Length: 314
Image (cartoon, rainbow, N blue to C red; front, side, top):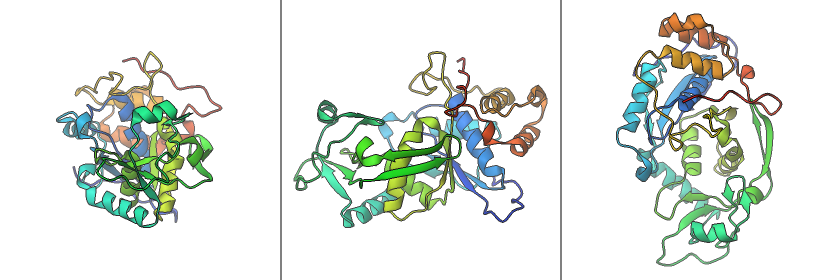
């Protein structure tokens, strides 16, 4: 994929860097296309870079060939990324280095609690059971598989989202000490996404609103590691006829390999950009020029004070 980009911005604000980071658990579907389109437009509107990262952290969940299929679908729809694709499976050294830094600062501990035990004793939180800190003050277990958890500091963490506004969360109280590396040795999403965004100099994170509540936990980790906090913009998620988020787990079908323009026009419409029907007959280059020039995230539906976005008929 050749490097592409829009002309640099005319003001003195540094050009942004955005990213799209799908998991290779199936083909690109409409909900993922919406995320890709929103993140690309947010970066390109001021001549910024747009990166693609494959989040292949969990081999048991991966579908063979899915990563290549996702990249081919992005290319087919004219979503041109800058630079090489980053694969998280190649990033073990970076994640280990971060864990060592946190451990040296006394910010991690080993945990032997199973999910079943935690679910039985923990209160429900926004991201599942709130870990009660059972292993926080225990000596490191000897000879037993264990996860590595972050000692989450007390206090409120705030995020000013570009669409949903200000969110404040007591991460320690509402999420608890979250896992950085699982007992099976696989790195957790929370650690990997923070390290990769920092190492790739991502300045704007655009993604679905289903991840909004996890953002304060990521900001907490960014601050503990001394990283800059990127700007966040969460868009409404696509839901199917049953009202659930459209995803590979809920049977969302992949995008077809026919004419990409109807898919793009539908994504722009879902994002509130009011694309004219004439775009369906335009060239891909013309469609993208129109979308970049007209992109305005303030038009997106789904704010707390606005109607919900439409559901997607699969």
